Length: 371
Figure 1: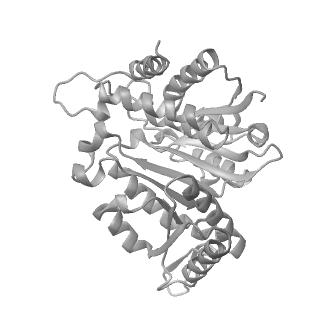
Figure 2: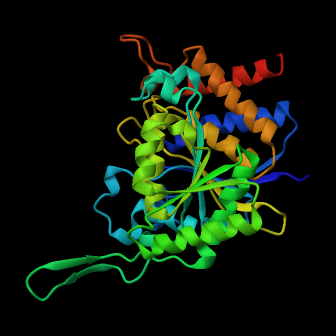
Figure 3: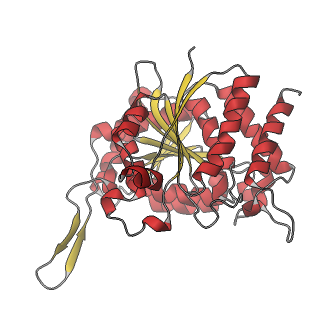
């Protein structure tokens, strides 16, 4: 097996800080586990705008299409708020998703035992939680046409967004979710609003079609998205894998995120079709955003970005055991109380810095080898 080709895009805010800790983990795998990575680093978001006047240069887009996987830190910041919509930092992220056709967004919600008391829910509700939300990422109401704000000719205005899905778009993300359920607990819950939306009726029918014909051994259920949101905070451990559309996935994945106690712990993956080498087009990124208020202060939690690398090992490079090694190392660090400020419970206790947490993860990886 040749070197794994990674395009690293640290981005803005805390992105470069957390990505620096990921780089240490990558070097550890090269020196201690014999892996080979071919790494290219480039700009995205505000950093790309500052350098090129656009949030993603065409050359960077070409590199993303040629890579085995993209690892992204974060984009955005208040200094870019007044830019034209077309060149805002977030447009670089959206371009990557669209042109790489990353239609399947994976958002795990895992509650590490050491953090169970950080959730707003009772410990017994969230302890041991391990669910995966699969969100369709390149269609639906965020991309549907027509869209816009128009005059109503009576002195008012009308905002228009179109919810649109095709059979092919639904079936391919459904297959992605079924495959993930097959690797996990064998249960898939599909969520939509078939009671009030024709697109929801089509969604339910097409997911059922895929399930009956291609995945009869997976336990498939359907739930209205509003009921699903309620059930996520009532008893989330009833779920294994959830598949849903772009809009509801955006909402439900953020709901699930807060069950775990901190956005600083949450990775994500966005996957597309497999290429000639059998690997899917893929981008991995933490959920926490650029956090400009703490950028450059050594306060950022690197765990979500490190766990995003673990997802890359699992889903792009078929290195599931090594992905688990990273996850166990992070859990070990948390259990030892080595945490950034967002994860502290004891008043006046001293938080660890970004680099201290990163170093502790490396130590835990060494311990996993008996070093």
